[in-house]
Length: 146
Image (cartoon, rainbow, N blue to C red):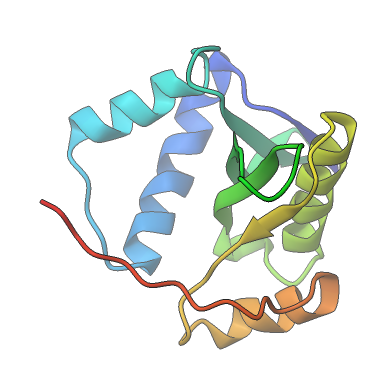
């Protein structure tokens, strides 16, 4: 298994994984939003990082994350926004591998912590998350502004 930054040449492998991720969450995005997301991986001003898991030369999963600052800590946090492994490659430790890769990246970048969220109904993912991290004491509220 290889954990590495996403490359422009990974577009053809990433796009079906991205589509599978959106399908899993029963969400659709415009082609323009997907293009914007893809381009942000390569825009240093945005600080959106894309990573992939590669197995036998095949990109089989991804993790997208970005740094944000807090008023409570002097160092930035790394927020793991998207995590996905191809259904054909699940149950091989790739999710944990991607999370650990992001944690190593966060640590080497001087971040205070790596954190993420998931849907309450995503029990399968939560089994992994309880294994590799602690459940936060905080509840997330959101107000949609569109």
